[in-house]
Image 1 (spheres, each protein chain N blue to C red):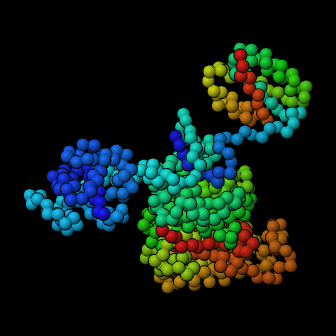
Image 2: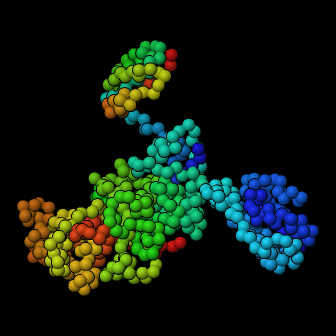
Image 3: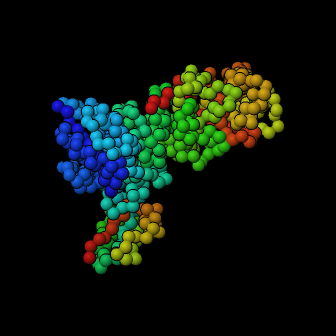
Amino acid sequence: MTEITLVVKQGCETCTLIEPIMGQIAEHFKLQVICQDTPDFPKDLPVEFDASLEQSYRLRIEVVPTLIIRKDGVEASRIFGWDVAAWEALLGIQFRSDLPKFRPGCGSKTHDPGMQERLAAQFSGHLLSARRLNFENVDEIEIGFDQGWSDGLPVVPPTAERVMRMLAGTLRQPDEIIGIVPPDFAPCSIEKIAINAVLAGCRPEYLPVVIAAVEAVLEDQFCMHGLLATTYFSGPMVMVNGPISRAIGMNSGGNALGQGNRANATIGRALQLIIRNVGGGRPGGVDRAALGNPGKYTFCFSEDETNSYWESLAVEKGFSSEVSTVTVFAADGMQGLVDQKSRDPESLCRSFAAGLRVIGHPKMVQGSDAFLVVSPEHERIFRDAQWSKQQVKDRLLTLLMIPGEELIQGAGGITEGLPEKLRDAVLCKFREGGLNIVRAGGRAGLFSAIIAGWGASGSTGSVPVTRQIQS
Amino acid sequence: MELLDPTSEQMPEGRQPLPRLSKIDGAVIGLLDISKPRGNIFLDRIEVLLNEQGAITKRFRKPTFTRVAPDVLRQEIAGSCDAVLEALAD
């Protein structure tokens, strides 16, 4: 049996244009007319007024008029707008000839600004399983502080509408559990990530990056529990590679490590809020940082891959430049590195090595990993000399071989240091794989940056983790 | 306003009270008179009982019972007391 559903609105000129032929369709088929904006259109046929837009939402109507043909209860085809040839072919009816041959339709009311999220919250709310909390007579911004959801800055109230809008940023199901978040070892669903992404101020298109970042920090080798609990300064830094960083407007240029870019700011913040809210990791609780660092509010940027002479960090790790990745790193804050005089790679490497030598402590070796963020003006010096990133890294690691006599306890009048038995050893500042180089920053400025890592690296602590971002 | 819980939902809804004092002896206990009639008489008696058990008491008074305590007063109590008792009744 063939049934026809026609979705219209009176405010659409194309719908009013075809009003005269609706009766003709009803003579041939069982016709259901759904009108979005009035119970009185069309005049001469029974109308189902879709005041709540539930029917239109469930039928996924984007344009009116939309004609849906069902055979034995199953949708067989649909067309929208007015195209006389298409309608006649589909229905096998000859329509009167005084109508124009073609008219585009109008937007469905279900696609008015903000309406999709409202309808999704109303009619697909069953997809959400988070506990619903009700508040009366309170300032909506104060709720986040009162409930302990905030990192100290205002959070966006996570209404069902906002969470549904956020979830539209991923194809993954809200109830998918992606891992167990320390320190409470709480299961973390895509829905919980989306709620915290709302709190953080993310746009829906950032959500896949946030999800990948959470997955990355939950990998065992990243050691998120220890990183949270440590008295050290560090927290998770997020570095993004690949097309998504440009698609969502991340900043890899001027002020890349600074404020002012929504994607950079809110992706890093969302990760921290998930550790706080889902994992229960809070300063003064399991987070025992002696000082912490400002990056524990948010620390996220992308590598500048445009016109770079070097391959990106993700490509170094074996990913294609066509895929997008996040790399997470147990990071302290950043230390500036100024060299405005060097014009050859050897001199600049010696500057970089001198700066890298002192991270953690001038006598600390094989402890912290580091990210060296090389600005374009510094990178140009290596480009002009045709030095690859690996060559720079090799040279730095050679320059960072340090005689034990400079590192032992008491050397330089400093009690801190390595045991006396290592006096005759020569030790590299970094463990194997502990030094990473990326390119970012503004076009002007012979400044680079060192982002030192947690004093516990490698198998005793945290290893940077890179993961591909899924849509 | 209805919001979705961003936490692991391991804690019950609503704000949890702070843990009770483990002992009264030696504790600094604020006594807040909200400026309702006879609140002072009630607190005088409470103060005697607390002092007998070794508590150190400090007296505070809101300017008026019709409004919440001023920030300065709340901060003074929070900064100087281990616990506070508030006399509510007429």
